[in-house]
Image (cartoon, rainbow, N blue to C red; front, side, top):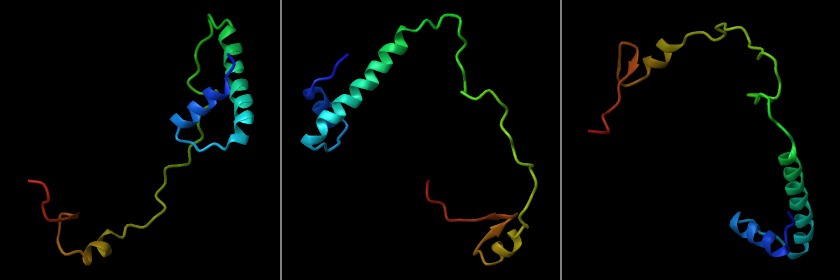
Amino acid sequence: MTLERDDVEKIAHLARIAVEPEELDVLQRELGGILHLVEQMEKLDTDGITPMAHPLDMPQRLRPDVVTEENHREEYQAVAPLVENGLYLVPRVIE
């Protein structure tokens, strides 16, 4: 699929992108290249190929689940206007 200059202008307008007239030729070539690549990929036979959930087939490394911060709840709630059972009490805003 080849893009015309008018197509590029319309795409830029729809995307709300300000494109200078001298940039249109470069964008036309680049977008045309992308569409050409998509056309090539559409021609590939993908029957029997399992879709991947992620391109890297490896487990995610996780950090150890260890508490690293001290509990300062009592200090923080000491300056709060209203606290009950470890919870901050605030005025009701939705009735």
